Length: 272
Image (cartoon, rainbow, N blue to C red):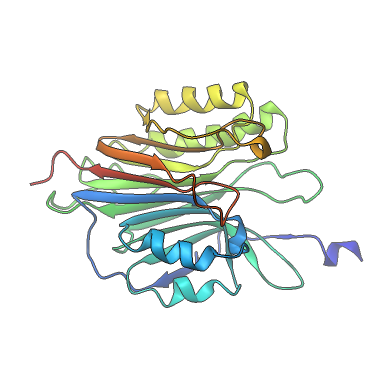
C-alpha cells in the first residue's frame, strides 16, 4: 500500500524530455550563464524572477526542476531556449517528475544523463547528472561523438549540470563524485560544471575540489553569505575550464528559492 505514495525511479534509458524552440545554432563566443536551484518552482514570485533572470542568458542550469507541473509553460513555450531535463524520480499520484534541467539558446549536439548509484534514505530517491554538448560559434565543427564520450577538441562546450546526493555517508557521496569525474575525463575541450553539490561539510567540499582540480577546472569566485539553512556552508558552485571568466555574482536579493541564483559571463578565447 505504502509503495503507491513513494517516489518512483525514472528509467535513465528513457528518452530525455526536450522542450522549447531555440533560435540559434551555436553558443558564444560570449556565454552568459545562470545557475539556480529553483526549489521545485513553488515559491511566490518564482515566475517573475525566472523570466527576468533568464531574459538575457545563453545557458541556464537548474536544479530541483519539475515536469508535469504548473511551471511547464515556461519551458514548453520558450522561444529562447531548448530545455533538456535529466529526471531523477516521479511522484506516483501527481505524475510530477523531478530532476535537473539545462536550457540553451541553441540545440544540444549530444546529451546524456546518469542517476546516482545510491539513493537518499527514507525517500529512496536518486540525484541526477546531466551532460549536454554545444557548438561554439566561430570555431568550426568538433569531432566528438557523445556528450559522455566525445572529445570536442576545443570546438565544443560540454556542460555538466549536477545535483549531488545529499543525506548519505561519505563513501556514497564520493561514489557520485566519481561518476562526475568519469564524465569530465572523456572531454578534452572547454567545460562548464555547475549545480547544487550539497557541500555542507568540509570533507564534501574538499572532495569536490579534488575531483574537479584533477580535471583541470577552476572555481568561479563568488562573494556571498552563508545560509543557516545550509549549515552555514555554500552548496552551489560554478566551475569551468578552457574559458575566460568575465564576471560572476551571487544574487543574494532573490528570495523565490532557498538558493541564491548565480550569474556568470564567459568567453571562449579561441573563437575567430
